[in-house]
Length: 289
Image (cartoon, rainbow, N blue to C red; front, side):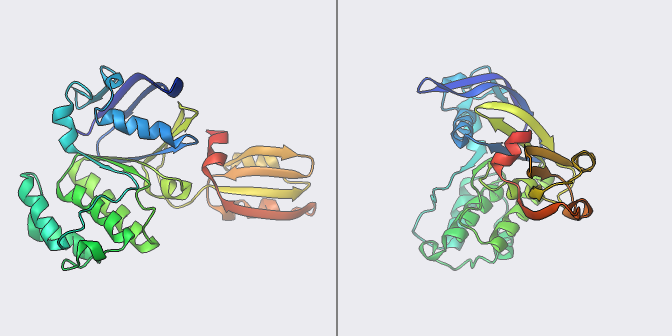
């Protein structure tokens, strides 16, 4: 269950349209991210995938199965993780792994599951109650891969993790989707995380899908550049990947897609008095996609 097809999907919540005529496919062995100004839209979409709303009938299919009608078959194959930590407080990591594997015939063998946990520097003998929030969040995602779930839905997946834990988790997920043809869909409030780890980004503005951007490489992060002064060669900048999102007589704001070093020679004009460069935000991205 890794091919997801959505056709003409709309959904109202409290008389507000949160999903506006969605038609999109999610393919196997991919990681997709949502960039949106309305995160609640994605939360509703995740609930529809989980078969919790009748509106999914005939509009969402997972490997040919109806998301609502066939939910009893589908839901056990989906790993869903939001910001809430749901790990039991009893027992240790080793005991939890053993229990999960015994309950799931498709699960990895115990020794291989233990190897994954060790690679993420989580002590198998640690009491679950003693783990940090980052370790708990990381372990919950590890358990999805141990159970070999073909679809994983993640809401702010690394919010409680430090940089090292987040990198380890994304490396695990990338390896997992390639080896198992699984599908991972996530939402994050960090555009940098999306651009660094997703294979594609789906832009959703006010409930409507406005663009789907495939990411071939992950060697650069979009930057927002604010230029004060005059003489900036806008047309030349656009040819190498810049998009103007704000233009005033003495201030220009652009989003630059590419290696920022390529833009630096254009910022050396004598009329420019100040340049500020920052990672692009979700709001900036939605202005151009």
